[in-house]
Length: 312
Ligand SMILES: Nc1nc2c(ncn2[C@@H]2O[C@H](COP(=O)(O)OP(=O)(O)OP(=O)(O)O)[C@@H](O)[C@H]2O)c(=O)[nH]1
Ligand SMILES: [Mg+2]
Ligand SMILES: [Zn+2]
Image (cartoon, rainbow, N blue to C red; front, side, top):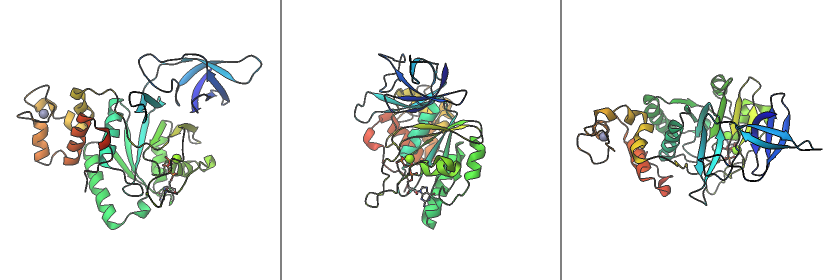
């Protein structure tokens, strides 16, 4: 038998079969995907083979089909370990709020670079626009211009006021979409707005810290009434870009990638090299300063910089 993993709690997996049955499955003994050191061998979105245990309605997973792609993050405590958030994703929506909680551009850029590295189309969704002041609307507009100019779609929504939810539904139809972003940005609220029957748990962000409360604790996949799947994920703080080499970081910034053949040195890292087309473009304002700073930061790969905002 086979199916898709729609939920994982660490020791149990819910596998949905083509007939639409949900079977609780386990893995037995050592089960490792070659090449990935991760805390979870099986993840949401994985296509797996399994067989039913004797005299039981539960199954044992015996095989994971090759993944089209997957997104990983570094485990917070064990920095060398990674956690696979989800696999076989068609597109990822990054939910962004400029306040309550703030989403910093360094985080957005790290996320986008990761999506580029895995060749997963990424869409920026600015949520909670019902709360935006004139000043925040201006800031959002400037940010959107930067991201649109380099090819990323940006959509303004309000999950609670039902603004532009239909626009999202059109893009999601027939696809596996993953929702990501900091805790409290409204991922679960948005999924409820798209598919109210799901009635996912949400919580107010803490008034003291203006941060989310990590309400969603496991990634989970839901099938949509208009065809397609949606993956809700727990809020993430940092996004570990695990296996980038310095030379390839620029390839995950579309505007840097586009210019690199014009640099004098073909292994130019666009830091201190002479006749660097990228640095020239930054000076002329063709490449946004904040994107370039995010790029430099990724080169250094300093964890503690995750939450630094270069846009203000
Ligand atoms: N005003 C306003 N509040 C919103 C909107 N979307 C979500 N919220 C509120 O933001 C808070 C957090 O929403 P959640 O959906 O729990 O956030 P989440 O991203 O799922 O958070 P985690 O599960 O912790 O990662 C709730 O109080 C929501 O009501 C919106 O469009 N406008
Ligand atoms: Mg949630
Ligand atoms: Zn260069």
